[in-house]
Length: 355
Ligand SMILES: Cc1cc2nc3c(=O)[nH]c(=O)nc-3n(C[C@H](O)[C@H](O)[C@H](O)COP(=O)(O)OP(=O)(O)OC[C@H]3O[C@@H](n4cnc5c(N)ncnc54)[C@H](O)[C@@H]3O)c2cc1C
Image 1 (cartoon, rainbow, N blue to C red):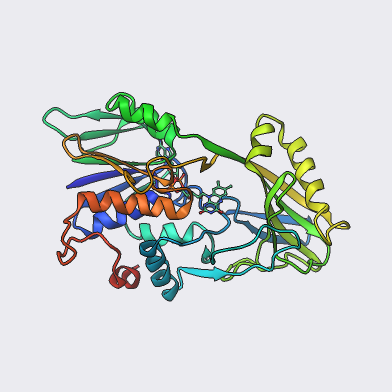
Image 2: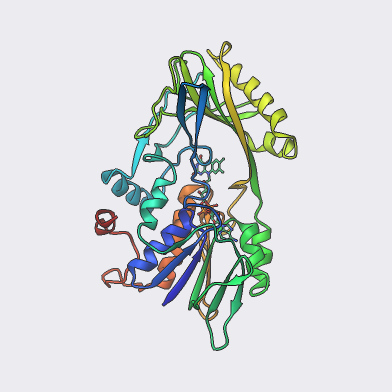
């Protein structure tokens, strides 16, 4: 079958890879310039003076993830064997929330896991899908920026946050669109900054009170390709606000938000003298689902007669693991259920070796 997968975050590339392994002809579409979605790294540079330019990289979306489901944990263990991901045990600041599970990061940056899974699959970048049109006799045409993409598809997978999926579902399955709209996503204001000060005795902070939910020194993660210290006595940090604080300040201007979060950061242990050298911010309107009402029972939505499927973290369970589980459930539903069949959807060691 010819299958269009709309959205090249972890859910989309996982579904695309599994369906490709099962013998289908898959094409990926994403409105961004690359893959990764919310597993994202901002690459930029800091020029303190005319002689120096320092590369910077900030994991400003998901900073790490955990793997508790046995199937996902198995995939991540295999991925670690092949160097796609690495365990990260940051030294936590005093007063941080307790850590219960191993944290994982993709190497050398967060979108790398998605890049590996997407591999050589056809990917249409900067391609915003604005609509889907039924073709007489069955199948779909994908509209990119209102223009029909050449060719037709037997099936379409939507792998994107619920509000964006609802917009594309409305004309075809209004009940799914309505259900998707009921899933709320939390916002997250994120500040990326370079500070001048010796590094504190810790790598990350997860304060249980105040505006900051998470702060991490970039480069304390394993396997990064940008040096830990951008210059002598400077470090780059990602500071992420809590969902409640972000919601309260969602429409504030970036300068006001940055000032408040940087001030809260400088109040963390050992950072009173930290001087801001460079900073920028990003407002995520959709960071993580507030809940995933169908996780575990209806982890992906599929309609074989219509040739439409939906997956994403909001269906599979909150976070990176949920995105993967949802995509895998969708692929399972559309592939041969026999684990011995060549078209079986689960990742195999051969997949890691080939990538
Ligand atoms: C600030 C932040 C912190 C986070 N922290 C954690 C954490 O600590 N642990 C954790 O496990 N998870 C965390 N997450 C959540 C995690 O990143 C997501 O759960 C996961 O990446 C979701 O993957 P996905 O494929 O379902 O969706 P996405 O990554 O959102 O992918 C959807 C893709 O669809 C594309 N798209 C959308 N609409 C269209 C369209 N119309 N046409 C074409 N393309 C389209 C988008 O560009 C995007 O690439 C965090 C996320 C953020 C933003």
